[in-house]
Each structure stands twice: as C-alpha cells, then as structure tokens.
Amino acid sequence: MKGQITTRAALEKDLESIRTIYNQGIEDRIATLETDVKDIIYMKNWFDEHQGRYIIIVAEMEGNIVGWASLNQYSKRTAYNGVADLSIYIQRDYRGKGVGSQLLASIEQMAIANQFYKIVLFTFPHNRMAQTLYRKNGYHEVGIFKNQGKLDGKFIDIMAMEKSFL
Image 1 (cartoon, rainbow, N blue to C red):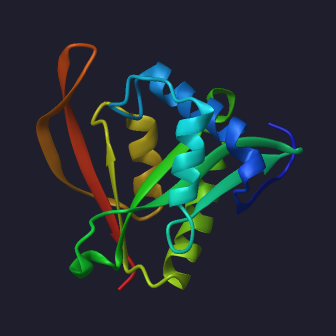
Image 2: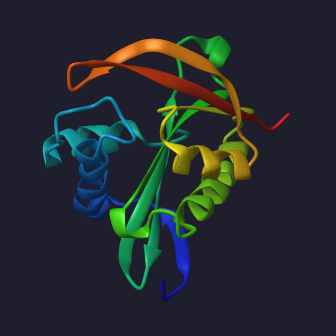
C-alpha cells in the first residue's frame, strides 16, 4: 500500500464515496444486518443527521476516500448522552491495511472533545478482522446478543464491544 493515510471531517461532496464503501459492507455481509444498498437520498439524510457531536470522518489516501467512521446516537435518553455508537467501514481493497486504526484514533479524539466518555459498537462474532482491529485499539467484548437479527434468512448473533475513556 502506497501513500499516507489522512483523516478529516466528511463533507457533503464525499457522500458518493461514503455510499460506495457502505454498500460494499452491505453486499459483503460482514459488517451490518442491512441488506438494501443505499441510494444518495438515504445518504444525504444520514449525513444531515450527523452534525454537531455525531460526526462523520473519512480516511483519504492519495486523494481517494478509502474508509469512513461515524459517531451515532446510542440512545435518545439523556442518561446516555456520553455514549456514542460507532460505525466504521473500509473500502474492500484497503481492509487490514491500517485504515481502520487511523480512523479509530481520529474518531476517538473527536469523541473525547465532544464529551463522550464511552464508545460502543456492534459487530458479527465471525468478523475476526474487525474484532482484531477493535481489540488492538482497546475495545473489549461485552457480550453476545443471540439471534439478534436475520441476514439472508438466517438468524445472526451480534457481539457488543466497548471502550471507556474514564
């Protein structure tokens, strides 16, 4: 892999690249229970909801977006205002090449700056690449939700992980 990875806040002009990477995650069936690929209208609405504390960042290499991460609202209850849910997606050709670690480091700094004291995430127990990334960066398993959802007609377990900044 050539070039240096940089991260920055996502801009509306990045939505097509973000959408492409998200749809790869949906199609590959390794990162989400979502099954419907997303159109640009869906992504624009999603982008508009991620302003202020709930941010989106992108990873760039040689001018190309190769991954993105977002802090999402964990709960509408005010008791959980300090907890963010994490989404992270990497372009197929760049998975396992350091993009995820760069995105995590950047999004964590932004989470702390925005008064989040914890990040939670949900991943498939069989997604070893993601679990390796998260564990390497200080996340630990909280538990497994059995039969949490269906994907392609089969029940799927979901692993909950977290990292506290307290």
